[in-house]
Image (cartoon, rainbow, N blue to C red; front, side, top):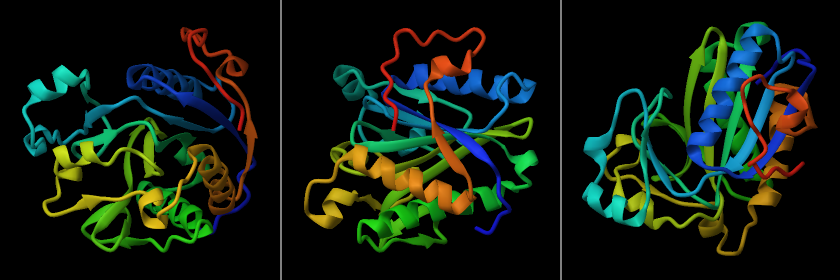
Length: 242
């Protein structure tokens, strides 16, 4: 994606974060970005404990197992405002939530989604994994197997939610749904494609470098506390600087 220089964005590595807490943080950051309390765009990198999320179009009908099984396993289902249908998040999947003012960046929504795909394509290429786009669904694919997904929301020009790249997650829970509401689609991971261990922390560095290249920005590591977000408590959150 060719862009003019966009300056410096903040990069927050949040480690493993409960989905609801990460969602609350996103909403606080979106509000701060809209009001100008936060004066720069941000990129959050994290992993979630096991959770299924439903997008604006729902997707509960694509759950292939009884909800009682999820309740017994302590895996919640959360309805959110992102695009798309049902998806799974869990440890070993790198989730990235950019909080960007698209209007100020002069980036349209479709071009933004294409740029997120480009980030994952570039990051995977650095690991020797050839991935591609597929007209069946946004995200990135290895043949008929999906390795990276995208689901975003935009509120008053500021985007949130984002992308998820399968590094080395347990792939079994993906078999409990029709991923993104698509029949006959399976999920894969970087570890499965490479047939060797792959660490999420190392992939974070690859994805950060790809973000900087695709969007032509500098990413500056910081912590939530550095942002002084009104009404949001970060005391319970473990964070790491990339």
